[in-house]
Image 1 (cartoon, rainbow, N blue to C red):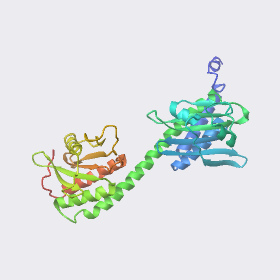
Image 2 (image 1 turned 90 degrees about the horizontal axis):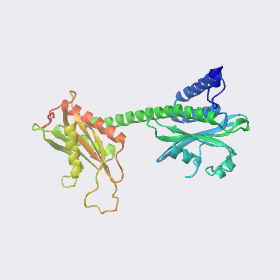
Image 3 (image 1 turned 30 degrees about the vertical axis):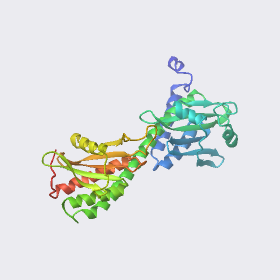
Image 4 (image 1 turned 30 degrees about the horizontal axis):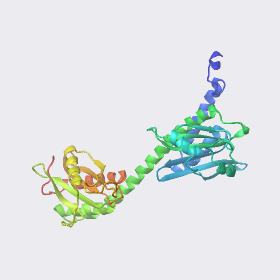
Length: 347
């Protein structure tokens, strides 16, 4: 029909072929998304990517600072074989795709300047197609790398279009799996922290309970210093407990005090890098610390205090530690609500 003739040349001929192709794409992506864990998800993604593109092998790799993991699926006479994905050097096709966020087709690895020719000879790769794994924010966190198109034909624009669509669906599934795994780890860490704090509840009284709670939390979160402050009847934020408890030790910096005041006033949690001291030698980078503070709220929502922590040198606080600090603040609010603490008022 005239409509069929108007289809772009890189799409399959005819509407039925087009519908079948994208139906297969969605079916394969659904199979990937239902994988029970991250490793199985990578394995399925590599297998389904190769099936969709008609490639002899495919590797799905996650590449982030401090994290490189992936799986390569390869067709054999007896079925699929799996092995860890390899990560070539900084001038490779994979690195080019990670840097530019653009797909790349190489139909002759022997002559392409970006091809890792040693790896290509070792693995028997003659042609390849690499597309980015793109997060919901547009950032690239990995690649899908297809090698050796079956039938001794080159990869084309149709292969690239399908690979990009599949990679976007696989990236969404991978990010969802990572978010679920992180949520489970957060829940386990919160449960462990509350178990550590539980013996303190009811064992002491007044500010002594808060001081012990702060100490247990600081040790569990592996921070250098911590402070718990409550809002007094005049609306002034006053420290009631500190870690370490030695009153002669330099516990906090001015930026730490300002952070507590800021969080008490705004009622919003903060996680920030601590500014370098003015006395620091220009040109030198002291080991960075970070600061976190969260408000202590009663059930009605009013802020009655702040709990803040400062990381050890060179060990910035993570978002998970910040989340756990919120768990501690909720626990402290519960302690205050069920007992009379001197100076605890709402701001």
